[in-house]
Image 1 (cartoon, rainbow, N blue to C red):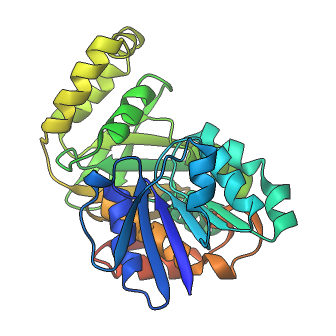
Image 2 (cartoon, rainbow, N blue to C red):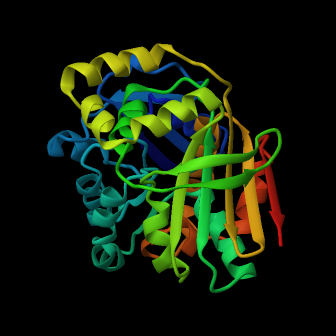
Length: 325
């Protein structure tokens, strides 16, 4: 019997992961966060209150747990350390490079305790990492270009919106990426997703860069404008930021469609469908299922799984994967 604790389990991604894992035999699924009242009931899933930032509370919550899936950014490295010290498997959907880099430092601890931690287990990073490995193997020595198109009509939590606002203006550069239909060619704007920082190391490519656009062309234009230093700085002022967070949580202009595409030389691969939260949660659930059989240590998803097999199984949940070149 395995017991999976999903921290940040009340959010959209955590809920999708819980739904996917709840149907597995001999698997107890527990969703946890600081506000149990936010949790929508899932048959066979237990909801508990856990403050991951409180070491004593976290320690109590880890009793009897075999795997932790982290779907929030709350002292992630400290949570990962607590898990690995106890020999508990750990998976993290974070897209922040500094968060993942801090967990990578725990590789020796994981090896010593015979535990496994897997990073980049969502859509971006995660699926993009696997697509990158596919095209890099087909076009060795080529730079990677990663395009992320997200649905501005999908409902997102305040933490996800805040993370996006914080990334505006962090990096410069725009280019055109070819997305699968119905999107076609779109201009993407460089955004600080973690995959572009880790992939040159993990799959030995010369360089990688990741750009973001939204399915709504209007919102993409506004996104580009908000990247300007003066505007980005204005949006970070506390009162303006708070107002914007409340507004964006209520405005849903566009669809819930998404697509990610990666190119290297003449090779290109894409993955798309509806609900990026569902795709992230389902990808994380697949990885959690396989985690007990993976090598010990701290690694990123593209270092551990067969990309085509993983993406094909994930696509069976209602998504489309396509590889050319």
